Length: 115
Length: 111
Image (cartoon, rainbow over all chains, first blue to last red; front, side, top):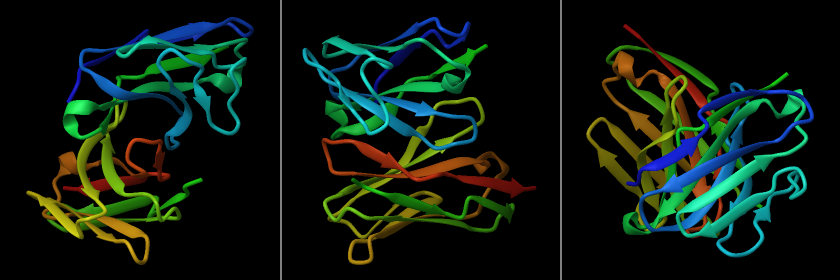
């Protein structure tokens, strides 16, 4: 597998502010994704983080709200912008690891609460 | 896009009994089907997976079956133990592309 370091692990933020979540992987990865998991819900794909180019967003998610960077193969950031209480959720970085025949592994998640 | 449905949403079994969770998918191009276990407050952990060129795979007490024609796959846990209690998610992927997850099954194993 891979060691996926995600930070912060949790944060409490004020409405209208922004939070940037970082994801660092210790292995060569082919794909990096960002998921959202609302309380008691499933995993919803936000976007695919593309190295060196704009992320590919799923329906319902836009770049202005969730800007994503991926400056190299092993690092990505997700920003949750202009937050509202509806953004309270767990955000998970996930990666496909090349050496495991592209299996998907998850970071430990960021629990975000917006007041 | 892909649509993955998962049943049941909750499942309670007595310790030692078997548990079965079923998923269906819509995209015939999907060819990789992993299962994840998520304990409370933890990240989803990959527990078993199957690719479309295989009909069944087993790893100790856990097995997964795949019916490509019917577009459904199932997770089987035998001789359940209290530590098997968790939320289980199925997923479908066209290898190298996005993963789409089922809605989850909350499994409770009663001692």
